[in-house]
Image 1: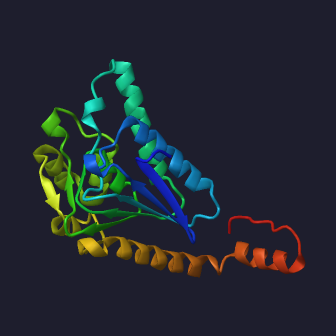
Image 2 (image 1 turned 45 degrees about the vertical axis):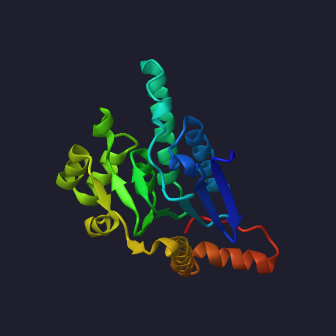
Length: 229
């Protein structure tokens, strides 16, 4: 990872941080590839049981770095968007629970990244925005799909057409997030949410046939045969 993306592991939790605070964590092309690689690694790492996605500084992600946009031909732009889609899908399809801790703006592709997570927690400073209209573009990153499924066609259309910023309390009432916390308590709340999720999951799988097989295999000193049940 470069200094713009950091991944830290601790007791089953992977903390993935966007680390470009001076640019409000605006996403470069390299960052998209590195986030894709990070989530692919997380998916196959048995030590990791859950993921926290966050941004350093006062923003989650201010969208794509527009200074790198529009410099390719049509095929180059398609390839750029394809990489963005793969990155979003790596978050959305991750089989480990992914919690987004959002403080400050999450706009454009940054909003899509948050919406691709399983749980979204907000600080009081969080703001969501579908701002593509302001730069003459259509929504991308799967935002239209996520929003329509979360809040319905009418509200999703309003956010896309108006390009207005949605504060934390409205995002909560719309169903775009599950909790709002004071800014300085957000990361702690996200960790506690992970622990609660882990307890729920563990309580379910401890009753599974695979867990019983694992215990029996351990006691019998043999290799377990898991069947996904």
